[in-house]
Length: 172
Image 1 (cartoon, helix red, strand yellow):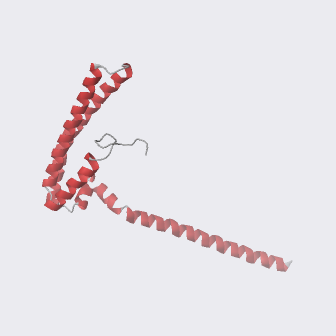
Image 2 (cartoon, rainbow, N blue to C red):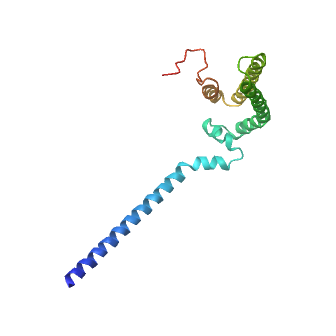
Image 3 (tube, helix red, strand yellow):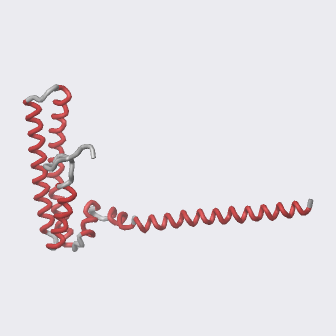
């Protein structure tokens, strides 16, 4: 009986040691995850604390000086109200077109006019955006300005939405 009791105490001691090692391992893994997460998100958290978090990436990506960044921030602040107004006008026009499409059963002069106005507004918006992008690029050092325009072109004006001039297979 005494031998079994000793064996049981030894087994319990081993189990306690195993549980302790397991808990230490899990605690270490959680601490490591938290540390790596904090390191990985440090720049994003720093951007969010900046005066203009929506532009902070631009300063870092294009190596802008404080003066260049202030000029771009000013351009951005001046452009935002125009952009919001244009977006509002486009959304209103899209709403008119949606209403027409809900009640009409075929192409009507009203639908034609609404589509034409929506296209005109989108074109005006793109022209305004391009003017803004060119103005921003001109406040940067020449090489960075060219990089910025390339980035803008790839991200905003040339994505393939299936409506370009090139043939598009809807079922690749």
